[in-house]
Image 1 (spheres, rainbow, N blue to C red):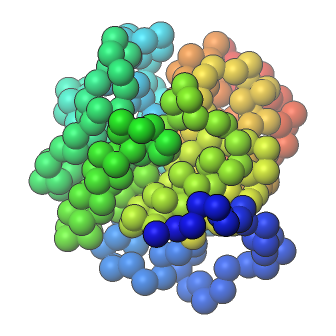
Image 2: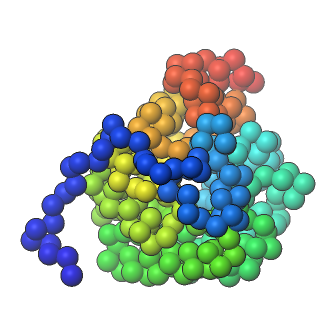
Length: 290
């Protein structure tokens, strides 16, 4: 058992030293099976090593929230500009044409909604991920939630067990509840717990000191967009995260609730893949708008 009286916060993250013994282009993935690497290479651009994921799985807890009223009208026009689509199996089957040939990060747990207490989730059958030809499975962890922490960690480990069996990577998604701090110490803990339990990718939130979060996580991190921000602020969020070592973004509301979602996702791609500054990305957004 860890001695909580002498639990010392990490302070030597080797920020100036690259990860050693890396032949595959994604951090921490050298020793994975061929199928896992193949699926990850569908999600992460091989030139930049990064990804722009389009998340529209919000409906499984929020229902038809703004921007997700009609997937066919609001989301499908954005799909060609995303590196990967993150959604639930119901929406994928009902609304996303298989001819799009886009990598799918399948939301692989389901449970409570905004009408009750969140995070009481169960994991779907991995066979459905295989049938959908998912490139990854996403499972949420509620680190720090006294009621749901152990259950959600168990969900992740179960998904990892099944993913290893069938060659499907797992993305651990760190939830932030009302009693959880949004700081580097918390996100470092939550991200590391995901990786320690076998997640191949971690989705978490940007914060001050984010470079330490990335350095202490041995697998790629993508950031969640979170609540809707003004377009320039959202592009600054992307820029800061990439500059601090993130391997991409998984944007939802900051894209599909934008005043021009198609222009916005292209501006995000410019920042993530092409090294545009926030100002340059915003200029691109305005040039493409309308």
